[in-house]
Length: 486
Image 1 (cartoon, rainbow, N blue to C red):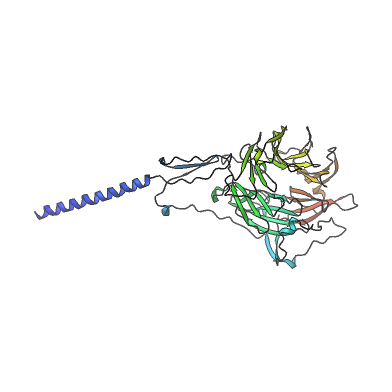
Image 2: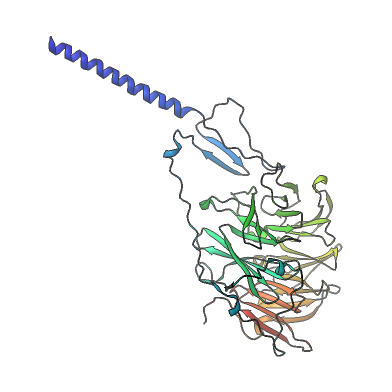
């Protein structure tokens, strides 16, 4: 009798425990099945719209948010504290090619009559003067690092010259060959070739441009999924090196456009970007306001525009593609009305667009190096090719009265008369001494010293021109790159 009572008690307790366990599991399943709150980004005008679910609509197994052509999915979690966060990889920054030295220890460049002059007086009120910290006790000394993994050369991704010609900006890639990557920005005073400021950002910048009338730089940042970085436009304060704002722009992750096919042009009021989202041109009001109801405007071109430029009168934006050059009214209220269009049918994407002689009907287009095609000169409705020459840079010089065309074949530079398209002068850079080894990576013309300034793929920077009263070209090294000596 005693054994029967004990057995009954044990069975009763077992059933009670089983019921409690079943109830707990059932409650947890019901809790996991409840919908999570989706994160919704505010859409901008003409940008891909985000669909908000009606109130009360039950979520499926996963929540999905679409921004551009990227779908982001997230599984609802009951306990966020137990979710394992993805580790964001660090960017390895090698600063061995940057030194900070006392300001009074830097020796100025000495000029002589036997050498090409590379220094000049700094104009009052220039950008270089505005962003130079006159009370600083130290200055930075930078020389491009030479990379041999994956490619050989300096990792210089972007260049820009200020509108007054007093500041040269160079974007040097940081990080390893396989990434992730950041960017080091070096600002040079072109009157004495000293570094005004060196600063770094964890964004991978591929296009940079000075915003006229201020001390701010606009930059296009490429996405890096490993660091959860989006594609977009950043703004940097040149006086401090600080990032002022970043605006995310839609980007087709299923495509990989070349960085040189992405265009950036700026006015004091707007920044324009194109070449990455099909035929859409994005107009971002400046300064960037990420909290604005409409952070950017959009309009369409007939083909993806890979080169943008503001016309000499400042009233129109020219967008060039392999199919046409189009002119748009810079006016959001008028929805950027197309004013005119000229068919080009180039067969390649132009990467540089320069207007000449102050007229929007005369300009020159240059392709990227990979196309290996000659630049095209456009006058009114006519189109002329600089035949027999590989792709290069077209540089207006002497207030646009001449064109300096730098080609990658043997580092050649031709000075072309826009009226006749005849080369009135020519030089092959590799024949000039002292010798440098590297293809032309960037070239611009400084009216202040009447010389071309060239940065090559090994990071060397030099000037090329004629000394007063001489017929022969001269070359002078401004700084040497980090290439290993042979």
